[in-house]
Length: 358
Image 1 (cartoon, rainbow, N blue to C red):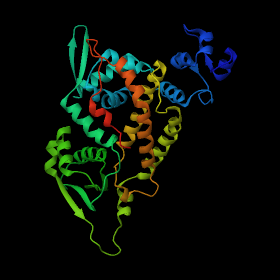
Image 2 (image 1 turned 90 degrees about the horizontal axis):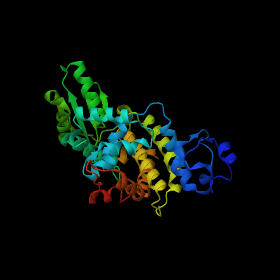
Image 3 (image 1 turned 135 degrees about the vertical axis):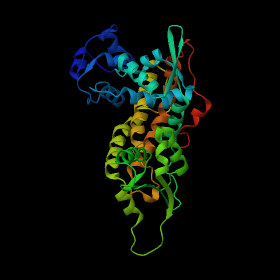
Image 4 (image 1 turned 60 degrees about the horizontal axis):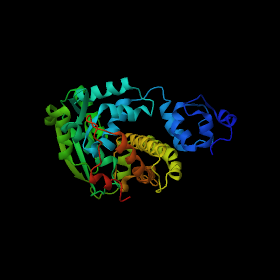
């Protein structure tokens, strides 16, 4: 039993009423858990509130939520494995549990269509949305990094992209942003380096992103450090080209947020509605935070990282919690993520291999 009296609930900071009434909440913990978003909880740090609910409620109480970014996470983590097509109404319902209103969702979907991520197909009075080939390519490229099982190995060669000296400043800035998004470090204003990037894939990606007219100004090179004395060490190169201190700080915060939640989600998760709902919501926020970190991470080989790199701890926490949430969250998606004709979506077989080997 969560509360012994209404007074206990009020002292905790829970106020308001629902159609269930406090009497039923006092007798059924699951009803409280399933309706907690209908209450105004003022003391989220209270030990009687599960950490999962604290985290979900804090997200829902944010003044500004980037709905488009969260939807991109949902597209990659849940909709892509289910065939890449969904009814907008079911998406609105799924995200309403995080207090994201319908207007924000429709605006974000409109922008994703405009940017080439999605295409729409009317089905009577309803509309299906599907990932385009461009959207699918972007998601698959990002997924290789987001769901990577371990750091890449290094062959000792540096990959470099050197920009032509006569390139215009605005074009250099455009390429700088694009290359840093792909994990490249800035060695100097006209040179970008990475230890493991596939330069052919990088050039193809720049073309697909609309920068094809700039490729003739880029000189791709591969180099190997010569074994000379007193030369710049590899770790010094990393220190100059990447700011890992801020990234390490973000990784530690991620671990501090999600590692305590492992205790609340053991593999014997049941299929109660409240349990499956919160498993889905937590899985979405877990991968959303994970994605924002990993896409800032150059994913350097372990040989080039500082000792006790917190990124590896964050990776292990994310993998383990994701697997613990998967079964219950999939039940919720099976029940609530539909197509416009009412048919449910189902994850494809390959989804079961995601993070499985961690």
